[in-house]
Length: 281
Length: 278
Image (cartoon, rainbow over all chains, first blue to last red; front, side, top):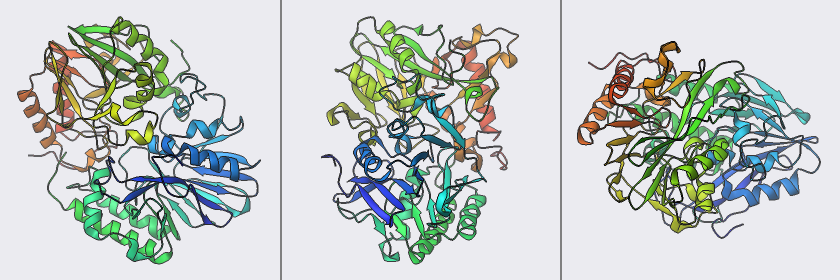
């Protein structure tokens, strides 16, 4: 843990199977939330291990490199390694070079979004040559799924709500976990030590908080005419038995009651924001 | 030119385009993306250097994958002058990917702009080298000023545009860029240098990388752009995904781009189903 970060580096979400990796940082100088003295924001990526494989969902921002390295050292062992980035942005791929550099046989689960292997932050390669041609790419396009040992199966799909084109979400069957990239990241930690999970609906912010915070990230939502976005989010909830929502920032929302409340609040907030006439493109 | 790269840096850049103004960078080649083999569509990933009498400022850092090329181009343009400011217009890879490397290579430089979040992505940068600017703030470069402006079209929250006063140069980040065919090779050419036989004069589709654009009537944004350029007269437009546009090409290309936006034509997220604003 660096002086700039706090919180447990590794949080076991499902014993022996699913881990949250990251740190907390003060809620200061972040674009997605207002400066809030005392409040801290968890920064997350995730590791799911099977008897044979270790699957990282996102790689986290560079500031959590020590925690990602710790997880790779302590939890991966000799398992095959795969990495799935939900977006090609700094908060998701900051340690992708670190992970792809662990071994020559690390695979990238790749859903789209550019010549990603060339711009992975690997100081050892200097940039241009990157990992192109040196790591296997396993395509993970929207609408498909990928099975791993032990009944682990990821479903890949287009993010129903997104700021960046080509954002993907993933649902993993065995842990009933929905990985939501930069959405659902509005549950913050009251202090540097967390907690990292939010298991009680009372832990979730009131609707006003969502209305203030969601447009900071999805800045096009106010005044938009996009009923299909609201329905796409509802369809995700209906199509999957989600027991845990795992965003790249904010607390992990866990348990059926908190998850139900989170989806309901999100739908209500989206509809309210779209009815807001304050902005047009 | 390395044919297999998705991020080629050609040998035409850097190029000067006005007093103390240089065009640097390269292109992205979607044909080299893992899922799109064979296409020849390019999009500029342009970086711009403003050299004042006393200070220098780099607009966008260049794409992470183009570090070697951008570093060489920058050294050539600086000609021994120090780099004083680096302005990533927003925190995406093509715009900010080399921020850490630039500040390490130029120890006197500071990052300027909306610098929120960069402490998460470049923890090696000392906090006092991240200087937050807001719309209306400006920097005196000597003989010219650089003003920070709210963008007309946001990409990520935290996007800022810039305006350089001596040349009347507007730096529009992701706004008003376009993609171009790569046959013949037109990368690094000004718009009036593109040969007539190039498809659509090398400009194929305006790049409107804003996911939410299809869900809005886009006329008001065009109105805001016209208001901005009334307040800040533009002689050269520099999109991060375009080339420096001046004189006739500025008028022609901008008019076409604004018409595409105003009529709610297709953006990167698909065609709008909304009627144009009346």
